[in-house]
Amino acid sequence: MSISRPLCAIGILRACIVNAFKQHAWISYDHDRQKLVCQLEPTLEGLPIQCDGYSNDAARAAYEGIQADTFDHILAIVPEFGLRVYLNPAGSDLVRLTRIEEAYL
Image 1: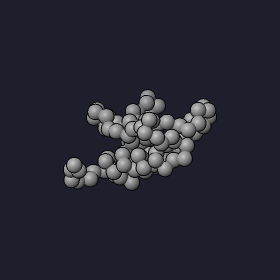
Image 2 (image 1 turned 90 degrees about the vertical axis):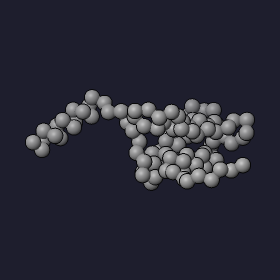
Image 3 (image 1 turned 30 degrees about the vertical axis):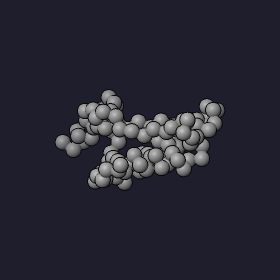
């Protein structure tokens, strides 16, 4: 039974990632190796999304390329849904912000 519910940005993003996995030539798509795209428990930093999949090519270089392509795609489409990627600021980020703030004082 299908439950009718309103669509939200994060749900549509998950569906787009699943669709991208299904269409990617280098990602294995069989029922023994289910791909998984799901939300994890929300944290103070936001809502984590977990993406699991299997490569058709066991070579390390190919795997790294597939992983990079996947993240490039996800990072490129996230803003289309009015969402943002959270990156924990590093010390160098804070120093840069302090310098910018001092320039405007």
